[in-house]
Amino acid sequence: MQAMLDCVTCFQDQALRAARAAGVSEQVQARVLRAVLREVAEADWEQTPIDLGMPVHRIVREVTGIDDPFAAQKRQATESALAWLPELRGRIARADDPMKMAIRIAIAGNIIDLGALASFDLDETLTRVSRADFAIDHYDLLRPRLESAQSLLVFADNAGEIVFDRLLLETIADRWSPEITLVVKSGPFINDATIEDARASGLEEIDRLTMREVSNGDDDTAPEYASPEIDRWIAEHNVTIAKGQANYEALSEREDVFFLLMAKCPCVANSIGVNVGDVVLRHGRR
Image 1 (cartoon, rainbow, N blue to C red):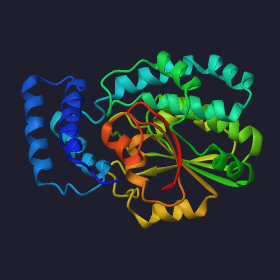
Image 2: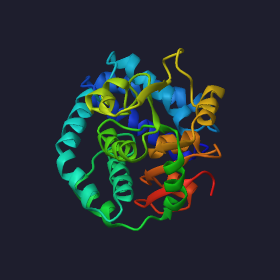
Image 3: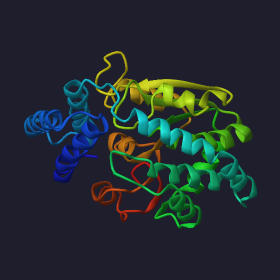
């Protein structure tokens, strides 16, 4: 997905929220904004939104001197999500189609997105998404692929959200036992999940699960989304799932990827062809 004009102003808002989350003075916040404005003004606006945004958040880290401005919010999101596990496991077990319910819960967790939203109501979202019709629903394509898959590649999105992804991956692992590769960010980027966040969420407890990292914009040792290595990862796995808006923005041109997300901004909603707030399970470019 190519960045749109609205993405430019959105990243300015993100930078200010991140600087405030870092707890720095108003003078430092102003320095962040001035540096971000210069960076965005000179950037190639035909990149994907995530490629445009990575330098923005690198500037926030450099100017504030805070490596992970949203660290406290990420911890709180993880703790809050973990408290939901007993209740949500019960909902999955009682559902007529436990796999579909696990997917719904994983998508509901996508509301935990500090890049797109300044605040959110997780309880309301879980209730709504558990019952809502999908605006795009390619479940009938995904389920048989999962049933026969020996390997599954999952691009994770946000801290806290990955606790709900854990429920989906547990459900898949219990039924079909594929090799699961979970892709997280190589370092802090908004509230995106890192290996440390995944470990805190209990993902390592899932059988046959390993983790890989994609670059957060600072790490030269991890591949970027546009790297041919990402294409190889997708080709090496029988099924690929990408969670959330940022992974849709980065991977929407790939042919054989299942996107699980909630459309939270008009740009992503317009790209997919749905309304803001809609729930989406979409395969590739269909």
